[in-house]
Image (cartoon, rainbow, N blue to C red; front, side):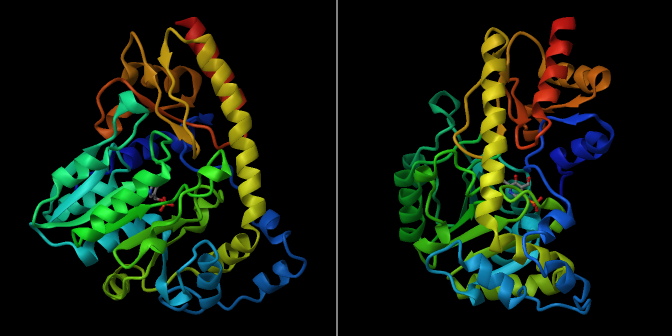
Length: 369
Ligand SMILES: Cc1ncc(COP(=O)(O)O)c(C=O)c1O
């Protein structure tokens, strides 16, 4: 397999663990195992007695049962647990696509959503988010992009990197277009349940019918990326079976401790969501004030969900600024060039508690320029 390096991951590999502040993380504030175990009085005892044999390849039935609670029409046998959302993306693409197939991908995007299909030899059309229209996607464009060999449409909402949350009508229209053209809608929903207004939450794509696949993960809204537990939920038996075949060649089954902790976390997901919401909303307040003070230097399109946004820097080169910021102030921002997106944007992350300090450092840096 020939695949291009994952630019975001390579960038993070260089800096993530040797800077003072990661101000561009896409995850939300995490916690220690002991904090998670404290949710239930006997959780620590059960964890200590956990058997470390191989686990069920689909994911433990009780974990899958918990995951089902996020959806309306999904049963445990329609959930396939993976090692992070990343493995699920890789396996879905390998299960469902072959060289010459056409794939339409919401763009800019998390690189694996486009790169894995390219590495298989697929023809990829980028479905561009409209920056002038708050990063919206136009469903009329989707219809025009469809070809006889289109197999999959990939969307991601709430969106990495813009924080765009699609209106419900648009989401339903995309699903309708996919269904009527015999195309699978792969919906990356890793930021679901991080909407700032709960009434804006979209239905999960997997509840729309057999033509859809929803992607979920513990990493973002629930703040537990170190568990490496993700999943797909789908009513499509063919997709499910094919992905299970691929999984036997990638990870076979998941880590038993990670499954145990993920299940525990999901039993208390309302509390985790509330915790994350509080951090995000307080941080957004800090960011709004920051961008107000620096209105001449940045363009800030306030996200409507999730823990990342994609502001634009005015008047100087974003790669130069990010390079000098990390070197002299120990603060990491992610230049938009790692998404191959032009226009001098950068990703900012506001899911972590230390954002106010990081913004303080950024401000000192800007004032010294
Ligand atoms: C949109 C999107 N999808 C999938 C993933 C992969 O998630 P994980 O790293 O938990 O496997 C990420 C991670 O940043 C993401 O932002």
